[in-house]
Length: 285
Image 1 (cartoon, rainbow, N blue to C red):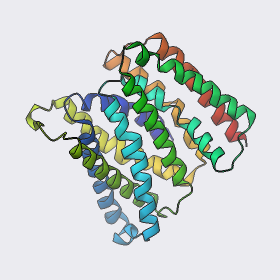
Image 2 (tube, rainbow, N blue to C red):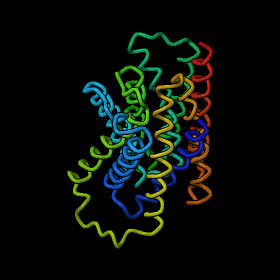
Image 3 (cartoon, helix red, strand yellow):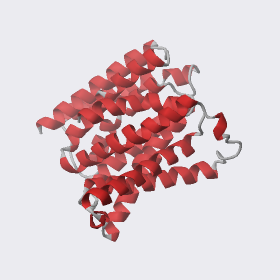
């Protein structure tokens, strides 16, 4: 949980630096394919090639979850951060536990009135956070992309607890990253991101940030998240959503001089409070 709390909060900063000079989907594809292959090799080395064996159903589940989490949930954030500040993106993603509650309700679970109150409070916070997009200070399309990404990430997290996943969480994480990375790479090629790409023009800080995202953000933090999804209550895992934004907003302001406007401060406070209400209520049940 400590890794997911702190490290993932810093990935929004890393993504913002990467997309300064590297196309979004190609950078996401390179990140996750590299991390996935490294993790595959690590699992085979430490636990033997047999640890990578999965059934067809388990492989299909890992691929689906990987596409939802990494192509839908992460790569869309990368695209959005070409026009949306990293701190604002993190605050919008903090709504993930709200969507998880709605998905659970759709599957027959009946959330408590307090949980539903937290969801409504969070919706109000998201409305405030969209003000920068409506006012034109950031692109509204970028804000909507992040909201869509949070919904897809929620679907992936919810599905991982319901589908027949590989028993070894590190194997599951490796297949998810390779699948999500290949999906992002394919989308990048279809969008034509390779045209005009000059690797010599990529800045040193973008390369460093991409390397950090591969080794720390993906290999370490995403693997920790995948393990938690199979080993800890989803309500506990979801608590990362109100720690990550605080880390991301502070880093964005300190390192990238991102403005802390009143919609970001007010809306962020409301969303984090709403997530706190939801998670604290769910953990008591």
